[in-house]
Image (cartoon, rainbow, N blue to C red; front, side):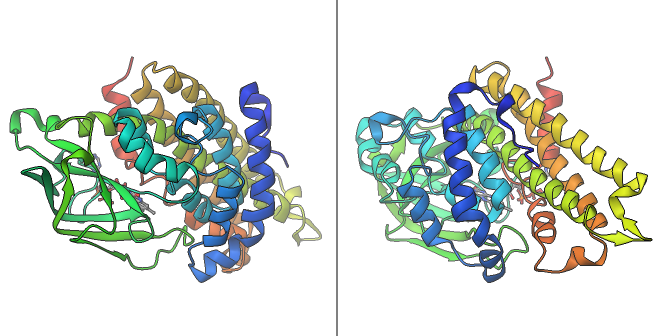
Length: 383
Ligand SMILES: Cc1cc2nc3c(=O)[nH]c(=O)nc-3n(C[C@H](O)[C@H](O)[C@H](O)COP(=O)(O)OP(=O)(O)OC[C@H]3O[C@@H](n4cnc5c(N)ncnc54)[C@H](O)[C@@H]3O)c2cc1C
């Protein structure tokens, strides 16, 4: 089956899609199960991705990247996530948050922090979520206080991809307390992970996307120079909202890749497994189930590519990003659930791809904003 066909992908993204597919089939897919079971960070695959110029390449050419645009990134994402969500997440998190610096930061910041990521010498992360607050972006409590020509950071962040492995992170922290302007109280900072007062440890093992690693970070009087503020004080929420519009299109690609994997697996299994003297795909109930999976997938994919175009053109971006994220990630949950059912007892064997995909599908409905929050955005921004 070739569910991720190119016909819906704009012409200029075809080459990167081919590169991503080739890389995913050579480096990600054959190693997926091993890394999933071991729960290891895929250092070698990340390195291969950096060498192949397929990691951190949204970074503009002037800072050493390829300047891939949103459709190109979506095309790459579908292929990577089809091959394996955990490894794909690690490859994508290697530059998570860099967009905020290259969009709003200074040339000096880009030279010092963005170029090494584009060139594969460093990796980054984005620290927004906290142990006590996840969905309420305006409610985050980690604080950055100005002290002379430095900021002093205190607080905690949770779920932070590469919090342990990264060279530096983009931090979303509170710099104000104006209750009448909840969306103007936060700012963005570049924090090197070797700064004094920065401590990070891996969070407990996950049931899904086990080849990616998240951290619990504590900041204890962690001092950074004032030059590490990105843009201006109070603009953090606005920067994040814009960043998440792009990110949610990419997370739609996570859902599509996972859904494609589930359908492939269910299709193959049901055409092979015999019961009552025939393969189970000969039962009409199974045929309808497979048809429903395709309906879910193709509808989500059409919507996602439409959303991609609108978000790239900044046309009702928040609305379209939330629509696509919700639809594609929920398609992944639904088709992997059906795929499990068609696998019968074998569905729960750890060694089965469908079991891995089923677990991975639980994550994109949560990260980059839980889908309930996406529904709030869809309702609130309806045209
Ligand atoms: C694998 C993984 C990787 C992640 N990587 C990162 C990362 O790199 N950086 C980072 O900053 N964060 C990261 N996150 C965190 C992620 O963004 C949060 O988990 C997510 O925003 C939800 O926050 P929460 O888990 O605190 O859930 P909560 O905000 O506590 O929400 C719990 C549930 O309450 C309901 N709910 C909450 N608010 C509303 C509402 N307004 N309306 C209706 N229902 C609501 C929803 O059902 C929601 O699922 C990651 C998470 C995971 C699982």
